[in-house]
Length: 91
Image (cartoon, rainbow, N blue to C red; front, side, top):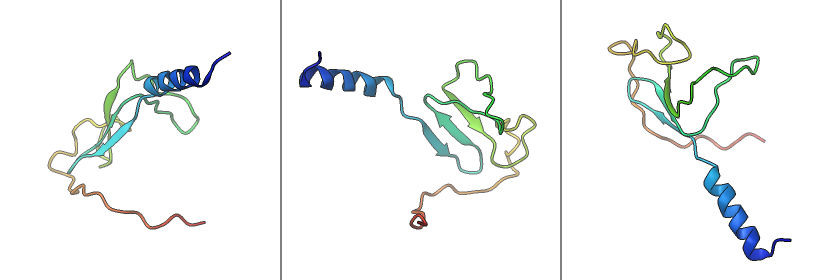
């Protein structure tokens, strides 16, 4: 049986095992994904990422390797990535 201290230690361990996934919108380019993630197609089938913890997703539409970035955006896609607040969620 766990006491309060034991529960705190278990929760800390669970938190340490959960990694944060970060998406970075690059200027004039891709979306960089870092962390522990899975990418699935519309049928729910996972892409074979071969253990990668960092990769880039195409957002220009020019990649020959969609949904992944192959650098085709260079010189053909412009977008300055500046964060902003979304409007409130519709209820």
